[in-house]
Length: 91
Image (tube, rainbow, N blue to C red; front, side, top):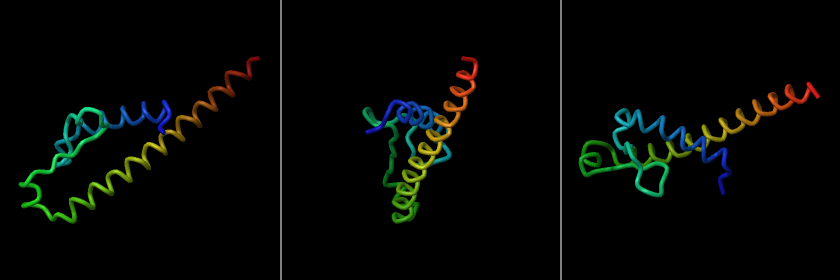
């Protein structure tokens, strides 16, 4: 289960990605309700692109998103630790 920081980071990251949806032909600008991200693959996509490449892209994309969010969470926690240490030096 995702904690609050992961939810916030995921929301911010997905907003960033949705603003660039035109660069990802199958990424929807607005996700389906209840989801953070949605892909729209039409018959045009399957006719114009290799099906196995589409599947590979979606899998790779999801793996990279998970990795990016984990790295951002570690970065936020490290910065929070430094800020807390600096703040507590005054006491």
